[in-house]
Length: 389
Ligand code: COS
Image 1 (cartoon, rainbow, N blue to C red):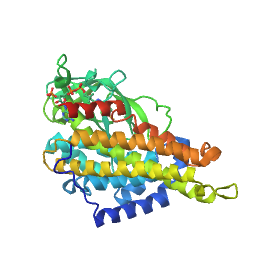
Image 2 (image 1 turned 60 degrees about the vertical axis):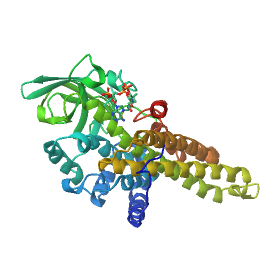
Image 3 (image 1 turned 180 degrees about the horizontal axis):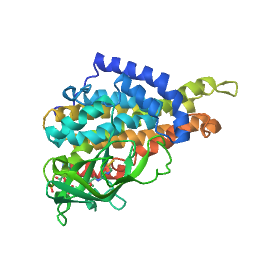
Image 4 (image 1 turned 135 degrees about the horizontal axis):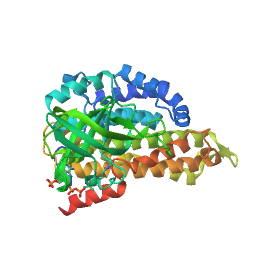
């Protein structure tokens, strides 16, 4: 499946970036992770630290005041934040998810209105595709946008929206022409401040508790027509094209969570003594560690290759296998993360099962990466479609 654009290079700059974000994550984010998980509060202090260091939305192009970092750099940032705290890694990840539709399809007016606010850290940006009855079948959405003079009026309920309530802006997909399916869907920028926008209660989740997941409810929300992203009827394509880029950031998140669990487990088995020696000296434990590291590295290589394709596509190259690579990276990395974090809990034994140690949090956080931005069953369907095309 590999085509031109599949080559990647982890440059010296990327390595320096990793060192910088890891230092910040170790010093400021990791010590807050357990508390964020327990309180379920959005970590505004971590957000502030990320903004000050310029790591909250590295993908925003320089012309809009951003860092202009490439897709691999965004992956590295998300990976390193997730290694410390998965909840916090949703800050750069959701900012990217919310704004890639703008980068791919929006007018200059939309881009210059919203992207500088994300780049400066003034506002977070989120993405609203799913609905209570339209999850995997995203095109089955019911949210309506009706043209009225120079405006559109939106009505509907979006569900499972990451960072809902804390984000000021939302890319919202809505039906503008009913009865024709995916081609009748358009994308819009909706603001939290728009009259008629409200949020459901926070979902009570297994993990990523520091990132609020809420419904976005729109009741007669009137917005100017210029806030449509792209042409009428192109919203579903924009939504899926976005996921081609951002499923790679979910892979990054999974890699980071898994790396955090592996690192912790390695430290633990060197210290923990049973039968008169460190348990890391037992071959059964060593084989587990080797498998964990092998799965992680395989997923990482696939993710970085996918990131290179994403970057090339963002610059206008026709990368036919981006969709395959993006789904494959997300699926491989999240399945690996679930296995690796579960094994980390196992290696810590009874201690691993308690919240006094981070492994169980990592295992709970890993689970979502197999579900959101398309379940891994959907990823396999997407991959198979590419193979059979
Ligand atoms: N990029 C751009 N356009 C794409 C695309 C992609 N990766 N994949 C499909 N499209 C286009 C198709 O070409 C088609 O357009 P035309 O009719 O003009 O040819 C349109 O989008 C609809 O495609 P398709 O018929 O394949 O859509 P389906 O309804 O069968 O759905 C799946 C496709 C299931 C893959 C899609 O709904 C999906 O990814 N679902 C999961 C959604 C998801 O990830 N939700 C998580 C919430 S986001 S955090």
